[in-house]
Image: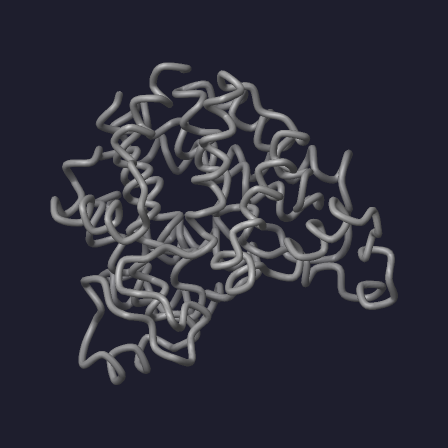
Length: 335
């Protein structure tokens, strides 16, 4: 189990750090800028969100769940909205992460937690709430899957609670539950099919429950788009053509109804193989750090740490001053 927990942590970190360099570009622009596909850590260009960071350094896509994991360990695995709020404030206190990477939803919630002012009620969001359904909900919740190996419903339950701390809407909860459920299943299964079915179940349950307890406004269903993305993957001739079709038809942007379906589509197209799927996430373009991080978390949990290029662990730990091996052991001790 330690091998799979560490694989999930490392896969998510590698996907985030590698994808940080390719964000905002199309797949063709990535090839033009880097001289081909990116298959190793690169220093992010000056026009990306991660400008000024070094090759191998993570962004918010991994640093937020990293802080969350530490809080879960201290709480002996108990997840709650309040714990997630405190973890967010601890993350926000790290200026190098918050100033560079905090998205609109995160900044609004940090402001509310600090000052008690709810900016969600301002006129700014009166007609475009769906803009708040970003992929941050999906990137930060893989630890809930790690807390509940094979217990998908428990992973979904805790994911809903944690998501409500920041991303309290049906779409965000749906995408988050898809990722957590897939990771939960991947820890005890060697089947790509079972992992995908768990992800679909999580998305459907998250959407249903989210409409009952959270904000509900017009927007595309994460669950239905996941089914569309999987359909595209199953019909594709190869992974490259699949990525092109996913980007064109599903989208690969910041909205959770694009990021999560694209990640699952790439996962299926690569038959769950860790490095090929992760590289496709890095090179699909646009919101690459989030897409690749989600893929890395799921494939790492499915295939274990040994499915990830061996040298990457030391790069991630050194560049980010993180001890993922120890973190995985501590997580295992509370499961």
